Length: 501
Image 1 (cartoon, rainbow, N blue to C red):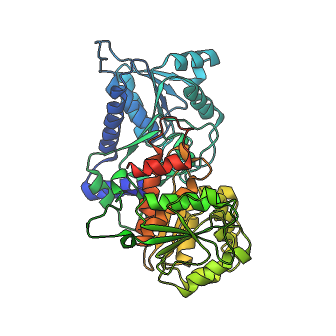
Image 2 (cartoon, helix red, strand yellow):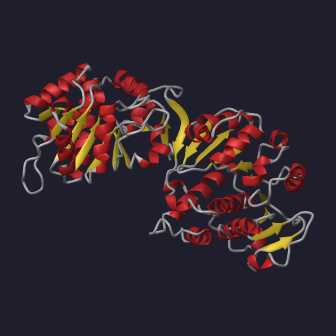
Image 3 (cartoon, rainbow, N blue to C red):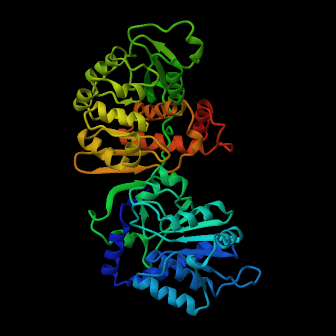
């Protein structure tokens, strides 16, 4: 996994002081990194959009470096700079002057007609966005939004310098933002690149150094400066529940109980996912009532049914399709309160229980909650943590997850989304984990039930709550990549894809 930072400008300053680097040296390395990505695209007609600050300075430096390059066929590259406004920062002025001395053509938007702008963008092979970088907030001015829109409408490769223009520091996206096919971010990874909104405009994200290794750059600042103890999960972080011993039986790998209520299909999917992810036994449990004969055909032979908890229950999944009435939910919470040693996953309907606050206060350990944003909104309200909009629960997820986790130490919270986020506070340190590996194929009814089953299977096999949430989320995300057609995923096919990881 990789570290994420809220504000790398703090690290820039600390690195210059710690290693004796000048801002100009670091800028030259940023331009070299951009140059490498541009050359990989094998583009000839290159348009570079430059702002007036240091992000614009990176663009002018890129243009200067490209001006001496040739394409694979020997033709000279002729980068064109479009200056949205005149350079303002000292380095931007310096780099603009250097680019002009090297013969780079620089045009001002004030001297271009609308038709000329459209013509330039339509013919470009590559467009580099060097308008705004780190620290952007507010909204885009009309000129920036217009040029970003023209860039987005073109068929050119689009490369953003550090951050796509219009991506705010908090991860929200301004109207008219630049939509990159690739973002070359500098020094260290920024949290804002991994918000749900950023997923549609950041493209492929690569992190390049600024004259020192990334490890030295990240180590330059004190732990408390710029860093939020946030981590980006990678495919290599997945640890599958492979079996190490041979002298075993089905009881060796845990017995998952899945609460089954109004919508039996949800519990069936969770149960199937649990079996495919290593659980030895799975029982659908319906306390206080029996399963109707008309429902039983949905239950595959390998899933058992019961009106009570199996004596050897080792983990419980609660909430999927259960129904939101306290009458349905409370008996399961009461049982868990009496069996604090049994880990549990709470999802969907369970998050609306009126007694949930008292329950979590009594047993925060061995509890994993997996709401989607709307359920997260309801959960925060239900627990007395505040009334927030669904947009808040998306755009302020890191802060709201931390708020929840500090209120309920040891509890693990996984808030679903385009980039699921997992939070945990162990009593001394809060840590946030972001999973960027999922695809839009997961936007399908039942995929959340599969995730619940995967995590509960790991809990039943003895995994710690945080490890179960991380590995279940990674398996869920990586399995979604198996679908060539992003519309074709079904919950059952997703379960089969998990088995092939």
